[in-house]
Length: 485
Ligand code: C2E
Ligand code: CA
Ligand code: CA
Image (cartoon, rainbow, N blue to C red; front, top):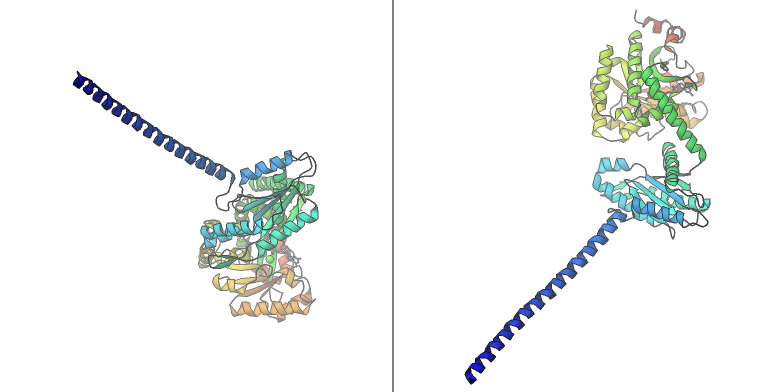
């Protein structure tokens, strides 16, 4: 009996041990699952925080992004009981050049350095954001008097003008800033940003590197621009209102016409006769310059066939020149018109040379190889670096009329012109002076060795129908004799 009782106890103990083991295992498993659960929760939280961060920040600069900026402006506007909100929209100048020439890595580094520099000027309570690309914005709710805002804009611009050391190069950029101040209680973010954008755009189109406050007139001029763009689109389609005028170019003696420059004009049905300075920039911006430029080239070719002994100069916008396939387009247009490329001179501005791109170099090379001559227009207004001329072969330089205007008035001007001519000749280039208005300028320029003269002293740009009559008086019989029968 006692043995049976002992066996039952042992069985009970064994059962208990199993129970303790099972419960222990279960408890251990629970602890592990709780730990795993906790870890997952922490990880999730971190992921959430990261997602939250990414939703509000720009990864490259760690600045708030556009969404965060929008919320900040909305919040600032909503909380206003008095005062106002101001936005400074900062767009970098020449950023694309850095990206194109030094690569995206350099572009990224530049954006980061810009963020650091601009942040250093940020007043208390203001927010700096990167809206995207090379566009930054500051929102302020305090210190909105004009003087304080001007000081802030100037400080930002000064820091952007200083050279940026990027990947072993010194990069020079600059910035354009548009400023808009919202009215108390009625600030609408979209409207505020639109106004800052228009003001910034005004800075860009008037030479960059500066700041402007939005004004109502800016809105009006934008509306005018849009209207003109639409009208130009229609004029190009109808072919009715545009025409080309031709300004004679003289040899050094000023007696013989050696060429014509094709200058486009627009007979606007409401606004009257418009000069190209008014509509070429619009055409460039709206992408209409390609159609306009091709149309002018065709017209110039048609007239060139009538005046075969004269070199026909045609202006080419940098926007056209940089477009893919430009050289072959020009070649085929001229060929289809049945004109010898050696009778066509393409006038380009220094803007295209700054690009330093292989495309521009090879387009220039292609065109010269096909027989076209290339003239560098407006020489003296831009970078005027003769060193560009070593890299980019051209045939002629045209000294800008702003220089020629000073000839005969101040000694320095003729000395500069003389130096340019000497350098040009040393590089085997022909030199033209444009904007010659007085006979004194004409004879001074002749004395210093200018090859060609152009200006009102000889003739203004003429309608096609006026060419025969005027060329007879300006250039004498020699020009007329060149007219193809
Ligand atoms: P540009 O190429 O420098 O053309 C010379 C400008 O100076 C012309 O103005 C001409 O009329 C003016 N001019 C000529 N002689 C004198 C003078 O003695 N004194 C003064 N003060 N001015 C003189 P325009 O025709 O108004 O053309 C202005 C600019 O528009 C041109 O400057 C050229 O850059 C551009 N342009 C004209 N036609 C075309 C075109 O078909 N395509 C492109 N892309 N640009 C064009
Ligand atoms: Ca020209
Ligand atoms: Ca010119």
